[in-house]
Amino acid sequence: MAIEGGAVVSTSANLTELETRALEAAINVADGHARQYLTPAQQQIVDDFPRLFKEAERMSYPELNARAMRALMRALGQHEAPIAESRFLTCYASSVAMEILARALSDRFRSVGLIHPTFDNIPDILRGLRIDLTPLGEPALLSGDVSDVLPPGVGCVFITTPNNPTGTVLPEERLALIARACEHRDVVLVLDTSFRGFDPRAQYDHYAVLERAGCRYVVIEDTGKIWPTLDLKLGCLVLSDRIDLPIARVYSDILLNVSPFVLAMVEKFAEDAAGGGLPALQAGIAENRRLLRSTLAYVPNVSFPDPDSRVSVERVLIGDGRDAVAAWETLRQRGVHVLPCRPFHWANGSEGDAFIRVALARPPAVVEAAGRALASALTARA
Ligand code: EGV
Image (cartoon, rainbow, N blue to C red; front, side, top):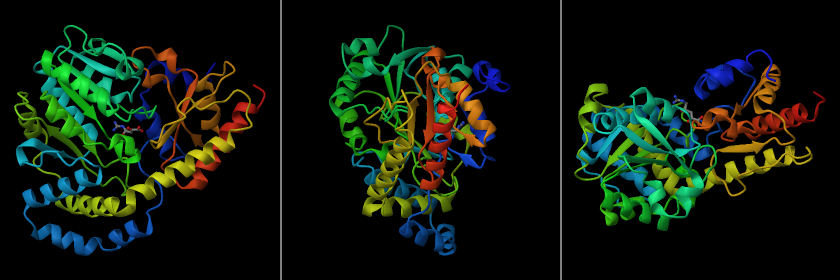
């Protein structure tokens, strides 16, 4: 099916390797990093970077860290997030936070329940530490008997919400139910909320829910997907009290501190987000989603399986027995890079064979060009 290069995808390439290839492409809608234009308000913050740098140089690190965290949590509706220094650990990126967490988990648990599908570096990092994974499908996470979410032997449950690539959000009542079950069974609940800035439905106060349930939890917060700051960003591990895992110790093995400049920048961008930046971001993504859907509207049997998704990536169900890897390859030869979804389905790759993921955090012209190229690739005679 797939011509040269295709075999690489189905056997060994991970999503990030495909994203790396796309970095040089004319039209890159592969990675989920933020590559849209800065808003005028964000541009002003950037124009002020020399002053911000001097300020960061002078300030105390713990204070900068707490200020950045407080501003970020406030912007995202997470008012009860613990700001005590011992309860949050800022990292260079959410993948670094993930690696630290996984090493701490591997010290205690052999088995983790993980949302399915999801971005493949999460299962890869966990498996790399010899942790066994049980797939937790989105339907089971969203409804039905909550004990299905906590299979026997599983010491930790890991949920990405909103999920990547589907945009599925864990609603408040369901989180409360799962958190209470975790408390009851002494299972650690981990949430990866990297995409929550895109979706107000993911901005109810998760910490209030988690604290009320009294479970042990770790939340990975992230700024990497939301602001086009050339990958100046933070990932963050937020811990419940008495987490009883060597997370702080592993953190110290990996890093001492993040950049004070990045902390100062995050505070400014978070204040802007709270003051109107988030709705502007959401409107831009919604516009790009409409644009992509309209460029593909005339292609027979192509559909959008996540109609309610608000995240900055969109799945396209290419239908008619078309193969995503073949479509990916055709597009790649034309300088347009998307992602085939097979690797997201880490427990059952073939489930992803009919889906392509298109990144939306781009200038509208890039999304439109990608949509047109995809439409043409799917309508051309094979
Ligand atoms: C997405 C890239 C890493 C990741 C991109 C991503 N891979 N960090 N190893 O940041 O959805 O494209 O999550």
